[in-house]
Amino acid sequence: MTTVSSTPQPAMRLREIVFGAACAAAVRAAARLGVADALGDRPATAEELAAAVRTEPGPLKRLLRALSCYGIFAETDDGRYVHTEMSRLLREDAPNSLRYISLWCTEPWTWEAWPRLDEAVRSGREVFNGLYGKGFFDYLHEDAAESAEVFDRAMTTSSRQSADDIAGLLDLTGASSVADIGGGQGHVLAGLLEKYPALEGTLLDLPTVVANPDPRLRDGGTLASRVRLVPGDCRDDIPVRADVYIIKNILEWDDESTRRTLANVIRAARPGARVVIIENLVDDSPSMKFTTAMDLLLLLNVGGAKHTKESLVSRMTQAGLEVGEILVVNPYLHAFECTVPA
Figure 1 (cartoon, rainbow, N blue to C red):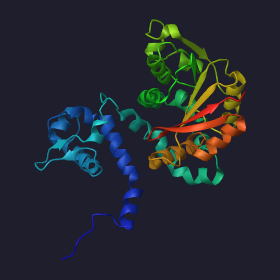
Figure 2 (cartoon, one colour):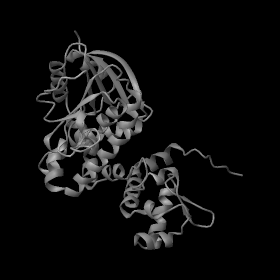
Figure 3 (cartoon, rainbow, N blue to C red):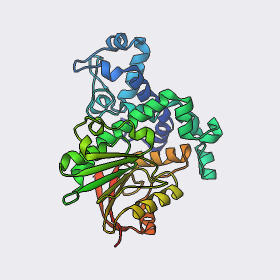
């Protein structure tokens, strides 16, 4: 009797990988249709789900069958569908929802950019200008309003989820002030201020960003009296004096931006100030498939790069920071504890 190994052979595994676009497209379709939201705690047939999301039952069953192969939804013995841990993450109301992250990573422009990866690897430059005649963020905000909204929601979701991990990890005992540099809507800052009631905070980011901060930081918010919102570009200037500076996921665009940002922090900070740099790494990480994929996407859209531990330490040292302990925030983020030299 011939037996079939449960482990895919290399040729079959490669076939599965090159069809990866089908899996990503299936996740996107389920997210856009709201299939996970329509499926509750009770098993449902494809026909019932199709009626709820207004699709044809046959094609929806094919979509669910494909997703079930990856553990996204599961089919019962009687042909009904139930949630799995991953499919629940596609629900909009899930505490750690990845619905908007899933949509962001599969936006229409990504399908145009990925086939040009060889071009980006050959040249070492982004391909976005060649595709759309303008830079990535200009395209988003001028030509792709829906994609820009998805981007904002995805970044907000990601920031909120990592903010709790960062607040739980960092010990700011003894500090009286903290500055979140390029901190977006300030979710990390809000988490730290809630943890340390005596702490004062500053959020610095582009004017359009700090104009719409976390509700806790706005006028009338629970933390508003302890926060200063500063519009600005950290690559140009950081007019903020604090005991602790937080820099999260903004040192990945290009070396010149990284150099200028770190130089501005050192120029602004008093000797002995803490600088905590939080980044995804493409090495020494339990989420290598995720972080290396983001690294390639950065190459495609803005010509940026995720760091290795060595490359980030090198840039921090060259800037004049004293690098200390490296902490694991979660499976995809590391925190580098640095000090401004005396």
